[in-house]
Image (cartoon, rainbow over all chains, first blue to last red; front, side, top):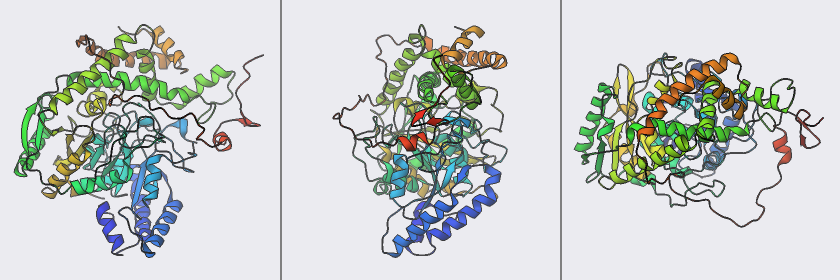
Length: 483
Length: 95
């Protein structure tokens, strides 16, 4: 059962091959048995999951049926889940029981999904390895000595280890696509504003976007269909009609023009990953796609631009954690200032504090123009690069990551080395366009991801190309040994 | 534009992070490595470029000024470290 995709689980539930309760029981047992190896869950909601599964079975027995009814999922621990701890993998929120559901959670509950629990992540989504979590790093099921990527580290590890068929994630600079690439999964980051941010703890508000990690594009399409759309409670929610994503999957690729940014294929890219990307290009050509070279000339400045603006937004967003209204409070504060200073220093991890200070600097008097405003101007140049490229092509394709998953601890003392790994993923967040990573090879036992990027609100195109690719390749069906 | 230890001390205070001496030393070193990477963007020509704040260039939506939220004070105060009679408690501010 645990090897099935979401779509196949849905069919099996409809055909009564097994019940949602049986499937949930099976997966909860796997979590108990195998999660100690990968550390992907922060909280397992066993009782609530079994109740939800029973309710879904009851509805099915009454003749109701829908794609996600009784389908198990788990959620990155930054989505507020009513009555369940929502920690953001931070000591700051270790005791925080969310008083309401995020819109994403609400919609998935309404669709009949069963939630198995809350997943590990980099603290407040700041990191690209999973190692900044207060609850310890998640491990990559393909090699337990390596990182699964981040910040949606637990989402990637849990789905890759077949503990849950799909998971929510969030992507502010690559936090869905990079872990999907590192663990052999398909991960989609929709257009900024496509899925509501309401109830999703804010890190960098002009970048944050909810999305999914699953086994294939079809499963991503089902989840996106259930969650995309305008939400008046999110002030930056997009008022744009939602496409029929599952229907788009089966469209042939004849006539699709795909751009290859020349800046993506330089010496920073592991040549073996480059080879895997070129093999995928040849396969897509056989399916009818045509390829042309395009240019994203501002790419070399994307990482710096991202870290200035994201840190600035983080420093503002995380000002709310003051030890007064919720979250951690230090012992015996001697006065109000001591309460602020010690609560925040004791409860935030090193990377979070680094970004708060970096952001405070970028926004401070005398440095605002040189850093924050400068970065916002380069952000415009990066958006313009994509606009120009999309005048020639329907999609852009390249590697998701320059390197394979690294050893746990390898970049722990070198934040810049970790930041530079985000080079291929941050541009989509800077421009706000949608992106998807799909598995396209295995090198030395480790998965490789290919990234597709599309113009605003063209998630259907991403899913269509990935689905067609997956009809003719089997990388997305590979399972790590032992899981 | 390298940061001195005293600059980091000021930044930490602005951000209300009570760093100790060892943290100030390590933060100064690590923030400077990040700044070295970031400073490369100063070379980009951005003359006459309008800053981009929202990737979709959306502006804030307006709505009618009516109350839409219900009172959930009890739920929210249940999460607070210290409350009394519906008030959030903090150390004494005025002597």
